[in-house]
Image 1 (tube, helix red, strand yellow):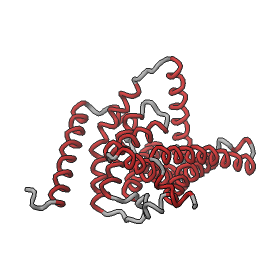
Image 2 (tube, helix red, strand yellow):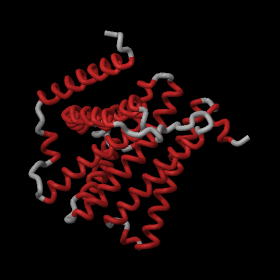
Image 3 (spheres, one colour):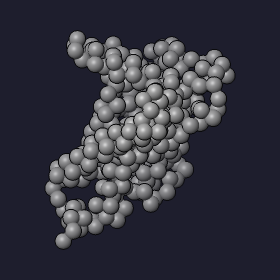
Image 4 (cartoon, one colour):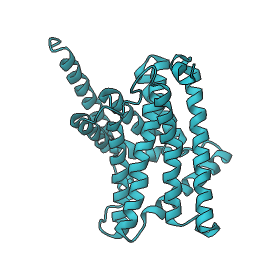
Length: 296
């Protein structure tokens, strides 16, 4: 009997360990293949060029995130035909609802980012996370501080489109679904998957805001029943950030994304939290009335 025919019957912990091993292996393999291809074609001096960085980022995302998720969907097919929920189309209302949550959460995300930047886990870890932050900032500057729309669109394709599709298939379609089966609690699955999604980015200051983003994407996936809803929301979130950064660098806009996030006062944070709470209650009540019209 083929392993695929019985994979869905394996203990949930074993399925998750299989998935984690495949994901880590694919990520390491795809990153190394991409780097070797760049070296073979352009030589050692080409590793830091914008085109090479975009190629490595895009190739690693597809090979390290999308491929393991598709493998999992194929392995689970005997138990669930559409495990990733990729056949369900994204409906307008869930997408607009998700966008509303992203907008409402923006001031809180900025506050959490500032709070995270003040964390000091210890001398050794401080140096480690400072190095990772510097590398991330250098990469963003290298990819988005460009002089042409063509270069920007190439970066947009990798940072917003490819990352949005690949990361959502892995963390929501794959990991969150597996955790929901294991925990028997979809809410726990949403937040554990969000925490892992955030931790994988190795950004201490961005851990809490990215975890909040992961929670929003997780609930969008859970309630919509389509992987394409969080994909579109992820793409929109990354895409807007890329566009703001590029337009400020080009002088099209005087809105500095960094200064904007630092200039928000406590009233914005309170409004953000209140908006998220009340909008969540409204959505919950709306769904309950829709499912049980007599429950009034």
